[in-house]
Image (cartoon, rainbow, N blue to C red; front, top):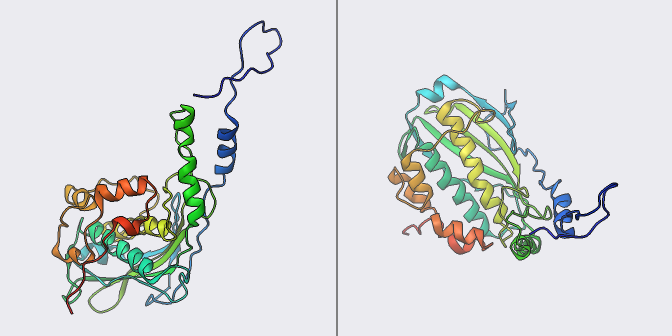
Length: 292
């Protein structure tokens, strides 16, 4: 409960006490006001064209977008080329962490595109082919993330049934560029996207790849919606996923076999691990090993 501290009585008051918030809560509230990392819109040179891209920002994400709506909506099949990292994207993340983040993009994008498209394997022809490149991934400060998780127990210790915002220190970011090409190789949609972790919606995990991994799903949701609707995903009410999408996001079998190439979502196990601050490397098995 909020500390009940005796304070100066208002003029004319003969009894009663003034309730003041605990100093720790005041400090955390003040610090959290600036709790959002700034991510740059970075070009990686992988898009076939950067022409006619227009700003289209969301509440949390920044982006440049171009889409040929009629051509995209006419498409019925899609194949995903596995996402990768540019050489300069994040020298501090290990190869294993970069692989984990890229696969998280692939898996979430495959699930999102399954809402309208039939997803086929990378060796099959398709109306659209997607290509994604991570252009920048600022690491999460593991010490700060751990401190945030420890600080989150303050409300319980004080008996206050209210969440404590994450400390706005050492927040990670993620920037990507992506496009969808038709059968002739012509670009039909493109997006340059950037978003930083914040103190309120991104749970801290003790991993330098924690925020990049978390933001990978946010990007995949935005880019898949661009292709599913043929319009910018920003500035509109969110749409509810299908039962197939919900099941796949909870670790169930994906709607299309091609998505199995990226492994199953950690589901409930991943949610619990994230809630405890455990690194995503512990709960996400990644893509299945391919036979040689």
